[in-house]
Length: 196
Image (cartoon, rainbow, N blue to C red; front, top):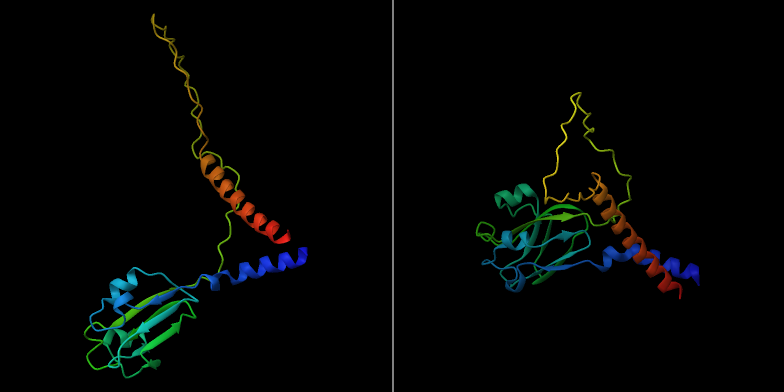
């Protein structure tokens, strides 16, 4: 039973990027049309490997996957891939920039083109490991050779309490340690839940 739980947990960890893949409908509700502002639309999206782009368009349009040079020059004669089925779904299978345009004459020049940057989501983030506090960068000052002149408190004054200070970097270490403990707790809790 325990081996089954461990195998299931490992499968879930490996498959999690696929489970969280997003489908991006190009242009939102407006779809892939001549009136879309695809630069602004793309700026509001995050594209990851495994996500899909969904182009919805009418019969006078299409989708061409093109190079950066062809994108910059609105050259639709060298398409890497072409689609014209009215509803095209393209899986983002590798990290890096991708370029799309409508192959209909004049549509690219009119703004019907899309540039995106696909991020690599296959590398899972690892919890930060706690570190030992570093020594303060500044060295304590040495007392001077001249004696300090004592001050006498005036009547009615009470001495003030000094509050201890935290050494440099200690709060960051504690914050990282808390994140690490929470991360380990979540993984152990999930493992325990699968074992029961």
